Figure 1: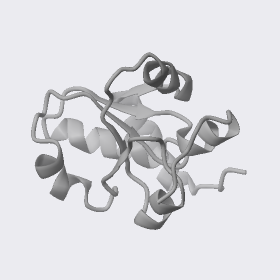
Figure 2 (figure 1 turned 120 degrees about the vertical axis):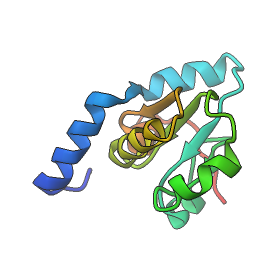
Figure 3 (figure 1 turned 90 degrees about the vertical axis):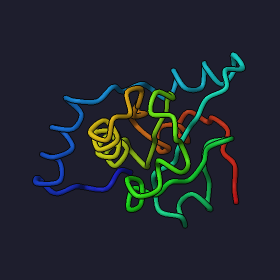
Length: 125
């Protein structure tokens, strides 16, 4: 079950979602199955990433995203698919990356929660 979020948090998430591109978990799975080489970044906490994450995803926590993105993804034109637990933190992170000049950032709506519900594969460690 998804956690209940506060109204002020949801207000900034909803504002961010108006400004960023989103995709579904099915979109990402279809592209993975087609063999596309995707740059997928998990923006959750390190402990969440260690417990389980999408296959091939790198970890760049939302708390350090703006600080570390240029060293991990120096090409601001590279497509980056961001995800989190439910699609809220990834939308906020996508908005900030857009403000930094990253032009092809996509937030995966529903996050790992929906990915897991669909029975799609996860990696541990």
